[in-house]
Structures are given as C-alpha cells and as structure tokens.
Image (cartoon, rainbow, N blue to C red; front, side, top):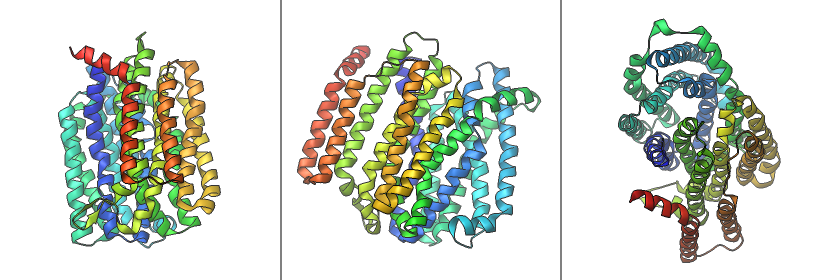
Length: 473
C-alpha cells in the first residue's frame, strides 16, 4: 500500500467513522437546548457507563480480528466464524447479567429508579459489539462506499429518532436511549449480510480462539484503563461537585472530543497501513512523514478552538445554539480536552513497535500509568479548579501515558519523528493558549493569529507539499 493509497483509504474510512461518532457531537445542540444541567448530567453518566461496559463486551477481539485476519478464504472464514460466534455468546450472557441486576445498577450508577433503561442498554451493547466488528470486515473487504453509506444511515436514523423522541415527544433521557437502540438495530441489519456471508460454522476453532484470546486479552486491561481516563472524571465530578457540574463539563467535553473522533478515524487507516509495512525497509521514513502531516492537521484544529471556542459554541441556527446558553461556561475546557487527545494521537503513532514485536502485554502498563494518574489528579484538581481541574487531569494523564511509551517503542522499532517541526507547532499552540488566557484577544486579532499559524504550518510542511505535488504530475 502506497502513502497515497494510505491517505485515500484513511480519508474514506475516517469519513465513515467520523459520521458514526459524529452523531453524539451533532446531538449536543439538541440535548443542551432541551435538557437541564442536571438532566444532561444524568444522561452523561448513562452513556459513560455504556462506553465503559462496551470494552468488556469486546475484550480485545477487535485487535485479534485485525491481527489474525487473512486473505486466504479458508483461514479468513475460520477467523471470522470463531470471533463472531464467541462474541455473540458472551454478549448475550453479559446482557442477561445486566438485566438481572438492573434495579440495583440504576440506583447505584445513576441515582434514579429506572431499571427499564437497562433493557435498552443491553440491546445496544449486543448489537454494537457485532456491528462494529462487522464494519472492520467491510474495511478489510475494501468496500468504502458501503462503509460510508452504512455510517450515513446510522447518522440519519439517530438524528431522526432523537428529534422525534427527545424534542417532539419530550421523552427525555429515555428517548435518547431508545434512539440509540434504534440506530444500533439499523446498523446491525445493514451489516448482517456481511456477517452471514463470512460465517462457516464448521470452521469454528477452539485452538484459534486460544491464540486470539492470548493476543487480544492484554488489550482488555489497557482498554479499561483507557476508558477510566476518558470517562471516570464524570463520576468524580458528580461525587465532588454535583450532577449539574457533570452536565456543564460534558457539554464542553463533547465538543473537545471532536479531536478524539479524528484520532479514531486516523487510527482506522493507520493500523492496517503500518501492519502492511512490517517488512518494508522504508517504513520508518514513511511513518515519520505521516506523523508530521497528521500532527500538523491536529495542531491547526487545536489552535482554532483555543482562539474561537467561545464564539463557535454560540453559533445559532434559529433558536438553537451549538451549545445551549446554560452550558456556555464549558467553552474554556474545550482546548484543554483537545490537548489531551493530541497526546493520545502520539500514543497511536507509537503503536508499530508494539505490534511488530508482539508486545501487546506492555500496553496495560502504560494505560495503568495514565488511569492511575488521572484518578489521582482528578481528586486533587477538581476540588481546586472544578471542571477545569478535571480537564487538566485528563490532559496530563494522557501525556504521562504517552511519553514513556515513546521511549520504549523507539527501542522496539525506531521511527525518526521530526520533533523539531512538530515541537514547533505544538509549542506555538501552547503559547497561544497561555497568551489568550492571560490577555484575551479581540475577534480580529484572533483571526490574524490563526492565519499566521496556518502560514507557519504550511511553511513547515513545504517539503511534504512539494513531494505531493511532484507525485501528482
């Protein structure tokens, strides 16, 4: 796969993934203009729980699918059949457990008497576990058009269902959960033919399952620590400050998670690409170029939100703003959250050494560093600085996770990262953040600063731009 093809595939599949994940981002205006701070806080805790429990439903099998998938038809069916049969059985079992303890879980996790929510949640988790893995198959089959159309269908159904149940029928949080279940059902029905076509029950292999679990299970604790870093701050804010603060914080975090959506989209193309380059002698140089390009894009978007987050969240269409007026105070956490996801981007860029050396067992160690520091810093920072303390705790914990991983992976597989150029961009961004905090700029000065930053970014990338133009001739 060439660098050009990598860029094309990444764009196509990232667009599809962005559409799927963009639903939660696009629904922020609806929720924050309809829900109170307390309601949005409860909503946040519900979907925080769903995000956390999903990793147990997957238990590293997505990574195993990417690792063991083969082009040979017989081997391919064996891998797919083994994974999907296993995931179906375990997902149903996990959902039965949720239903059995739904009353207690609703009271403990959400402080509400709504056990019926877990019937919907159980369905969402089963359907998403299978459909997300099927979307990986669609990527491997190189069906970008179907991938994008399926993602688009998910978005349209989710938006329509939320407008109907949350905005029109005023069903509140229940309406939001039912809407998610409906969109999950549609996604599953669309990918079901792909699953069925690739199944061969006679090829199920217990021996292969042991190998896949051996590779995939080390990703489970890593994923647990990752989700703690991403989501534990909501529960800590609820405990230390209160439910209203959770709602305000989550509104800003949702906008900041645009960077997470981009990181995930990039990783969809990145993992298959670097796995295909394991034997390529030119891989380190190619990876360095990719890192410079993608970090530059992330830096530009980060600086855009450093300068204009307050203006962007107040953009109105009719009577609805991007974030409801009750949540405008969350604008200042957005660039802090985004900075944390820049560190997560570097974490993903360091992955070739882990995969090439089959050292997935190292990941829980670094994720544990991030998760442990995240909880500790949240406990220290939230009482001092409120929701801003939570944002800084998340940002710093991502850095503490990524930096030591860099030094380890460079020993496993050296990549000549262009730190002079990437460091210049990120330090400039940090300088703009500090300056904007100390002496808030006028709108026109912000615009000038942003244009200068874009110009500097273009100058740093001039060599890559020339290479790209030459390749086009």
